Amino acid sequence: MTERSYNDQRFEEISENIKVIRENVAAGAEKSGRKPEDIKIMAVTKTVDPIFINHAIDNCGIDLIGENRVQEYFSKKDTLHLDRCDVHLIGHLQTNKVKQIVPEVSMIQSVDSIRLAEEIGKTASKLGKTMEVLVEINIGNEDSKFGIDQSELSEFICRISEISGVKVKGLMTIPPFEEKNSALERFFLDMYRFFIDIRSKKIDNVDMDILSMGMSGDYYEAIINGSNLVRIGSSMFGKRIY
Ligand SMILES: *Cc1c(COP(=O)(O)O)cnc(C)c1O
Image 1: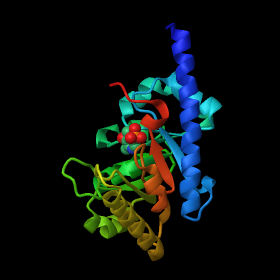
Image 2: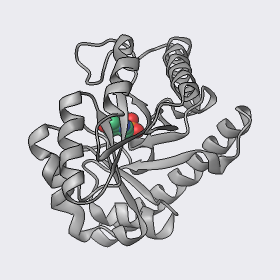
Image 3: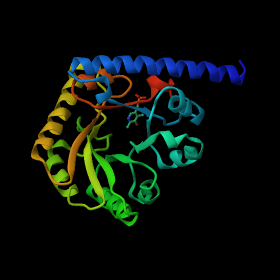
């Protein structure tokens, strides 16, 4: 196959995938008593060639992308059509990369330590901006995953609310891999309860607006359990090739 026709075929696949994702999101929204537009679809773009990301932005209405690694983002950013699209960092962030990424993104979804939040706040303040962040929770208490423990959540939120230059906008999680949907849904429901519980406390400088959960394999379950931002990679762009 020529390169041209290979790309055309992938463009078509991506368009079709996004159409299906929108239908499923709409069904989940309806099932949970919401409107399709209440749920934000993020395109997760790690390892994806910018021409395919730009296709999703230019032709499929994608206006939010999530990148995992600071270095990979910088290698792509000049070719991305970011005038029409927001970028969130969704991967683990090391404090020594904070200065580079804070000016670039509209949200950091992966805040998992006070030290990191302080570093983000310091950098953002110097730039005269406030960085919106989500607190990442390790809902399955897995050793292999980043995120704070649920038992620390209340105290963590209170401490982070006092850091200037940072504003908490909600919660994010990557749940454990589960064979059974019922097990997975319990994690999503726990997240939703934390989200509602913290929101009801009306903490200064904390807006519980965003509950970021649900990926390619489980976004429907996440939505019916209260997610309002789904992060979708492989079922949009195809299997990742590392
Ligand atoms: C890769 C990734 C996703 C998307 O995963 P898919 O299963 O490909 O949809 C979502 N969130 C985070 C944090 C990721 O790293």
